[in-house]
Image 1 (spheres, one colour):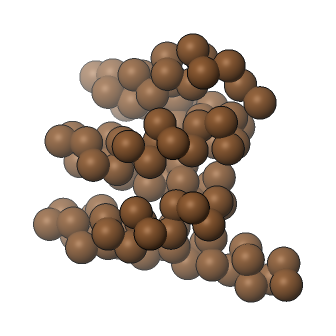
Image 2 (tube, one colour; image 1 turned 180 degrees about the vertical axis):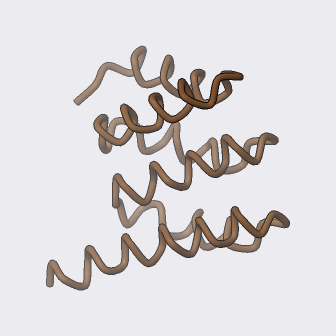
Length: 101
């Protein structure tokens, strides 16, 4: 479990101009697991489509069923990439739980 200060630092990095730093932050957030869940969930409503896309990817990798409702909402985003990413994350999480049972 990561300290919340570190999680918030990584969340802020999702807005960096450098796409490589954004992806590095996203990958590190997946390693934070459940401790990153709430802050990442808030990012799927960000004004920046790139931040929304990375947050959705992170949520799919974390795999928490708590993300399903917000991801369903974001599957209706005006941006088609966000829609597709949301549906992919939903599918990934759903498969995780269907194989666990």
